[in-house]
Image (cartoon, rainbow, N blue to C red; front, side, top):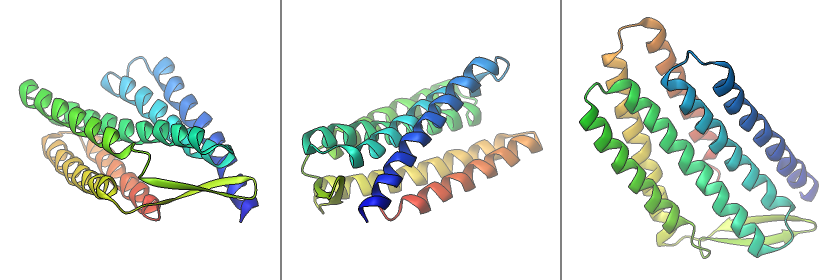
Length: 193
């Protein structure tokens, strides 16, 4: 178990470097990508933070430092969700007032989840040999986070439907479908956590 955990932690750290690199490379090279360019930069950075934090937890022997890595990872996860919502809103909504309303709402909603779910009593850390892992404590903060994630899934799906309906090009509709299914796979992969 310990060896598999260390391999998993190292894999996540290497994956974080890949995510950072893809986000920055896309931003630097694709100058004609318009709005997608900045969102891909943020998605790469947030995915990198997500993977780096959770990968580092397994290698950190001190629980207080592991809790800090967890908070950084949560920032990455929530930032990833916000960046994806922003790209969907920017591409799907023509009315700038409603787009701004949804963006501000999502920002503060995500910030509240990050603050509440970053509480140190949410997870308990354990050391298995030279690998650190954790288990989740069922409490108000975790249930709030579950509600946040479920509502974000619903909101992102609704925003994507609006974007799909407002899209004129087949390639954009194909992109929306690919984005939807990639998020479904991310959700399915995250269910064990």
